[in-house]
Length: 362
Image (cartoon, rainbow, N blue to C red):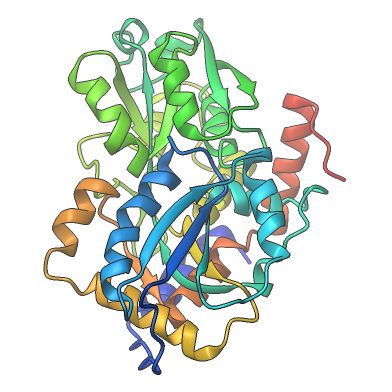
């Protein structure tokens, strides 16, 4: 399957699935209970902001209005938490787990540390996001829409790991001919932002929720300069400007303006394939695989109610960005998009990881 066909079919499938009605929930009551929503990252990143945005809305929508508490289990770029969740069984519907692209990519790359299987879990909500790369003011002053004037600069970047979602910016910067040295081992993208704020890194990227909540104020204060977004997909699978950041150019635009960067060929196809797997459907909420159907239906109906709130579009755009949210059958279709990647793209990335960072996953 070509990348263009993959993206087109994925987008069309998601749009169709998202239009399906949510099932009518059976009588499930969470009165007096506390629901733990476990996030396998630190509490400073985009996934934390995503879960903290949805948690009170979910609390209001679930029958009995339980307390929804977001808890954090960082480690190994989210693999620690995902491996833990794989071992959990349904008790009373009070455990929810959230993943991100940094959980999906090791799974897609057959990382030997992965002991979790997405197909064993039950998705109840999925949402897309974007990402914004930015520079410190000194280097930002050199940026003219291309990376040509940045190629002689040595950049430091705080990274969760080359096999995580960070492979999207790392590969993009390499394609632009930039010298970006990752410092691996941070526990969440928010920790990368803190490195940037302290001057320990001079380039960074955040997913949309992390950028809106933590990086946009740096831009407003003149302490950071936006470089590019990863973009969004239109209905034909083409990369277009991110609807949350329409005034910021996409990586595709910057690549086209930069000497030596190509928006066709193996590198581009691989980058786009992992962008598609990691961003249009990036964050998913799961119940354990043995959860009874009435509990699944209750969560599905609750998330559906959240998306149908009259104020949802306004409040979500300010906190997590302007992206689709999928529930029920839509979230199942979204999961398939997020956990599928072309074999050629996968092999290219595996070779790139080995050549660039000495990372071997076989």
